[in-house]
Length: 141
Image 1 (cartoon, rainbow, N blue to C red):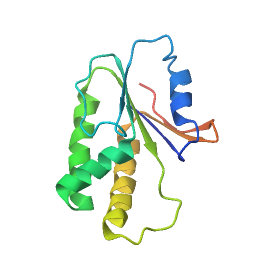
Image 2 (cartoon, rainbow, N blue to C red):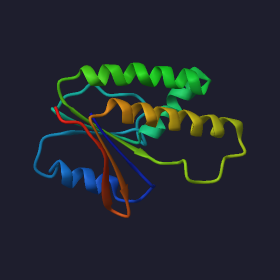
Image 3 (cartoon, helix red, strand yellow):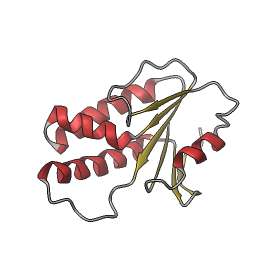
Image 4 (cartoon, rainbow, N blue to C red):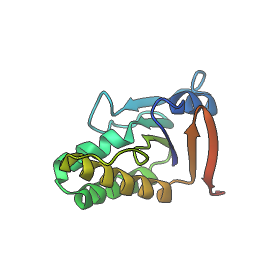
């Protein structure tokens, strides 16, 4: 798995498209901004965009940040077992004002924990800021 994170509108989608040559490679692109549920995987390369929105959906189901994290860890284990390249794209929300609304604070907490879990599970982690990548983890297979 590959986890790509960075600020909103900082070029994560463009970077992933270029890095994997997706203009010329069969792939499946799923956006959690448009759909809440995880799709059935059909291609060898699967991009899951908007991981933070998926975490929000899990929080709505689980009702606690710890519960959402547990559901996310189960899903990560399933994705790790897949014989395909799974790229998770998540927008970093940790560098802003802490929300006043309790649910939004729980969402921010859950997203931070789940991003830590995604980074731990991934073989590679890249941050994208202003279209520039920085590899912060890369395990050799």
